[in-house]
Amino acid sequence: MSKRALITGITGQDGSYLAELLLSQGYQVWGLVRGQANPRRSRISRLMSDLYFVDGDLMDQGSLVAAVDRVQPDEVYNLGAISFVPMSWQQPELVTEVNGMGVLRVLEAIRIVSGLNGSRNGGSQIRFYQASSSEMFGMVTESPQCEKTIFHPRSPYGVAKAYGHFITRNYRESFGMYAVSGILFNHESPRRGAEFVTRKISRAVANIKLGYQDKLALGNLDAVRDWGFAGDYVRAMHLMLQQDGPTDYVVGTGRMNSVRDAARIAFEHVDLDWRDHVVVDPDLVRPAEVETLCADARRAEAELGWTPTVDFAGLMRMMVDADIRQVSREREYEDLQVAVGW
Ligand code: NAP
Ligand code: G4F
Image (cartoon, rainbow, N blue to C red; front, side):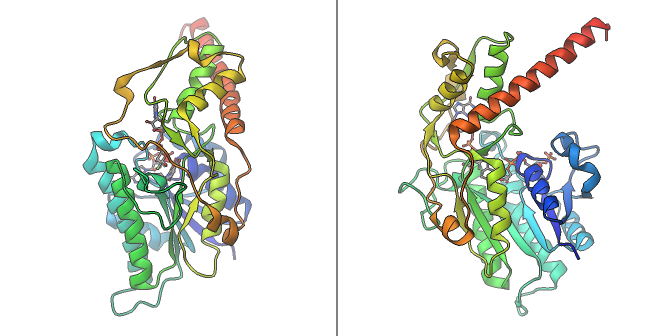
C-alpha cells in the first residue's frame, strides 16, 4: 500500500515541490488548506487532480486533530507558516501563534490521534517534519552554523521558529515520537513569493529588460545569505523522515553571497549593469538584521547523502529566465484585454 503524507503549507513554494517529489515516489499526498476557495492554489494547479485536500488551519487545534484523524498519515510535513520575516514585526502575535504555537498544535494532533499520553510514551507510527529556519541563528556566534550552534534569533519570526524547534525536540524526548526539524537556510525558485529579495530582484530585472520598469528599490545590500534551490531542499526533508532514528539536520550550500551579488548576477544575465537601476530605500532596512548566514551541512551530507545540485549563479539565472517568460505572458494578456475592451 502506498504511504500517505500530510503537508501543511502545500500551497507555498516548498509545499509545491515536496508534493511533486512525494507523488513521483508513489505517495498519496494530502494538503492541509485553509480559507474558502484558497486563492493561492496556483502553485499546485498542475497537480490538483493527483492531490487530496483537507481543510484546516494552524490556528485551530480541532481542525488539525480532525485532519490527522481523517488522513491517518505515515508522514506529516509542517511547512505552514507566515514566512516573510518583516511581517513578524508588524503582526508579532499572529506570527507567534502560527509559526510557534502552530507547531505545538500539529504535534498535539499527532499525539492525540496516536493515543499517546504522559504515562504511555511508546511513540507514534506517524513521522513528523518541522520546517525550522536558519533565522534561529540570527546574530551568529560562529560561522558556518551547524546543528550545535547557539540560537540568537533577531526577529519575532526567528523567536517563534525557535519555539517550534524546541517543542519538536521535546515531543520526541517526551513521547518517543519520530519528530525532527530541518534547519533550512534560504532556498528560492521561480515559485518564490514576490516579496523575498531574490524574487523581487529577478522580477524587476525581467520588467526592466522588457522596458516596463526602470528602478529597483532594495534595503540592506550587504546582507549575506546561503541561498540554494528549493527543489533540492525538499529532497532533504523527505530523507530526514526515512532514517532509522530521528535527528535534526542543517541544510544549506555552505556558500555565502550578498544581496549586492544577487543583483549583480541577475542584471548581468540580461546584459545590464545593476548600478544603473538599483537604489537603496532605508525604509526597507529591518529593525534588527541577520547580517550573515552560512550552513555547515556536513551531517546532512554524511548521513542523508544530501548535496545541492544548483549553485547560486545558476539559481538567479533560472529565476530571471522564468520571470522574463512570466512577465511577457502577463503583458501579452493585458494588451489583449485592452484590445478587446475588457
Ligand atoms: P511560503 O511559500 O510562504 O508558504 C507558506 C505556506 O504556509 C502557505 O501554503 C500558506 O498557505 C501556509 N500558511 C500560512 N498560514 C497558515 C495557517 N494559519 N494555517 C495553515 N497554513 C498556513 O513558505 P515556503 O518558502 O514554502 O516555506 C515553507 C516553510 O519553511 C515555512 O514554514 C518557512 O517558515 C520555512 N522555511 C523557509 C525557508 C525558505 O528559504 N523558503 C527557509 C527556512 C525555513 P496559504 O496559501 O493559505 O497562505
Ligand atoms: O529574502 P528575504 O526576505 O529572506 P530572509 O529574511 O532571509 O528570510 C527567508 O529565509 C529564512 C531562512 O533564513 C526563512 F526562514 C524565511 O521564512 C524566509 O524564507 O531577505 C534576505 C535578506 C535580508 O537580510 C534582507 O534585509 O535580504 C535583505 N534585503 C535587502 N533588500 C531585502 C531587501 N529583503 C527583502 N525581502 N526585500 C528587499 O528589498
